[in-house]
Length: 296
Image (cartoon, rainbow, N blue to C red; front, side, top):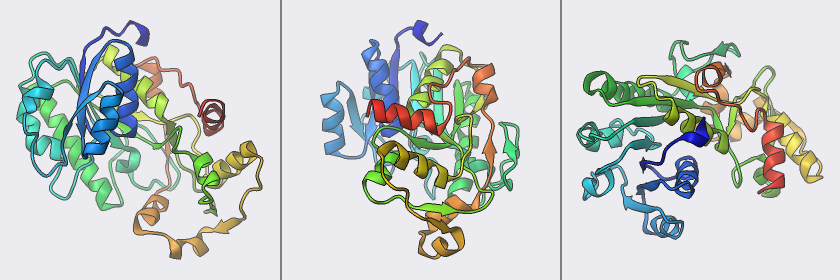
């Protein structure tokens, strides 16, 4: 059970939205938590929460890696790969492999590695066929992290995350900020996951490590983005924006947004339930958005 997870020492490469959520939860439970961030302002914010962060922008290694990695029992990386590969492994693969007390390593990837399936379901055994350069970099990064396990015995686990949302980053914020659009592309659906459910999955994996494992991390219901916006508007008591056909909206999209809409797949999450015993607190976007409304 998650509650029985003994305290350890966690180091997060990239203390952003998702890793930072896990770090705060574990720090409250007596863990020693540290990691990296990219700027002095972020470091000060983390320090105010009791989390010591080292500066790491991916361009050069940590000035004193031992200050963060000595004695760590768990490592989590949420740093995305760049054009030259995964920056964490480029600079610190050897340091990670040398950590003698490591019990668990997690790498946060994306379900974008599956590419476009025309709406068909995918599980962890599905072929990797990304349609974007960013997706191809993720495939390479996953392989590099898993090599660290296969060649050096590092207890690596890969987590393929669906679209992340949570407090401060949801359809509710889009509606409140006047940025919400209801774009309709017939047959298109996207998988999502609440940030607190990600943290629960990671904690469950820490309690039940299986080095070399890969997990899809998503909720139970892939849904069209227009439906999510409509539900957020309903919760806020405002009128939903009109539906815009994808063919009309596409010309105004950034290349990254077009890449997002290019893929259509439904991601299966059975393994995280069957193997890790996870019971999602937010099994669909309706439950997740209601929870954010109740406790923003």
